[in-house]
Length: 453
Image 1 (cartoon, rainbow, N blue to C red):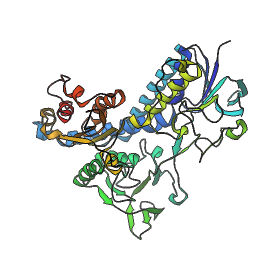
Image 2: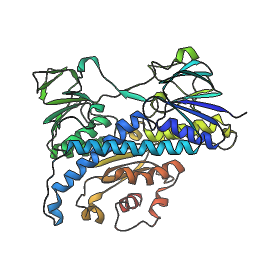
Image 3: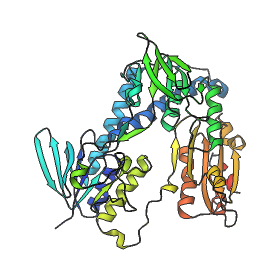
Image 4: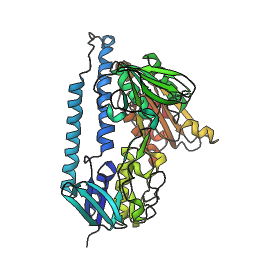
């Protein structure tokens, strides 16, 4: 009898687990309440990056005169942008469904929950259904945090999902939250023509990132007219009339704008999962997992945002594959556990920011000896060709062995370029391995080779 794997949640973690397990011979049932491909992925990640691409194109058109072309400013057509986002979502969901169908995965549209350690219930438009399982995967994702003090109305006071796209382009947007999501929205709306003020609760944007990286982004924001309100923790947002939003901070400062965006993290979608019924332990709504992504109930796994690990689609997909391998007994062979410290991440601002592995500041804080080499993109011919020499490449390595421990990139296509350093970090390659690779000229990747020299 084949192993029956039941997965609740069809996002990156869920559908990667489903296709991998199906290829390994499992009977797979995938339950999704919204859209196959994942709500957080298709309603947050993809549309935000598509809107950023639109903003980047508009910014580029504004500076083409320096490249020998006549300038061509362009206003944002929100109706066409909305059509574009919907088309991308349909295309990606269709691709996910096609892939799942090709692997004979049974897809059920409905709300899944645990009725017991090995029993899953599903509420569908056709009624209630119960499914017995040998293994269960919980991959229900997360949603934007909506604090009580924000008074979100979806019209003037917004959460991120109210912005894909907004009904009108804000004249002056006040962004609350200077983490990854917050700074991406600052860049997005500034590039589309909105005035933007960023409320920063600490003394630098991106408080969890390398200070040098954060400083580069802050400098670019200021050059583009973004107002930074540092050391200001918002504690209330309210409307003053039909067109003005007031943001109050704990220190008494007040910011007024046409719209406010609350971007202060997310919360897991776990309250309706029936965790207690199945004996699954949770922590603030997240499901703690071991190296195999198992909960305290050995045959019940958690992937993606629900696991409380790095909230990245790429991490969720890898978790899903690892769960499938473990559930199908493949760990009896050589099996590499997922190392979250070696996961690459990116921030799609302009310039882009990407990093992987050990950060310079963390190494020094821990008293660890490292070698840090930095090369500005201004020295790369391709950056001058692109008329965009902002940013740098930084590589952190072991001074004794030359093994690459981490790196940061700020600049155009940083999210693509970080892959080279990520491969080096994951596989224990040295700076010599990068430097002795013959790369294409002229490209931005040459800065990687120079930094490794």
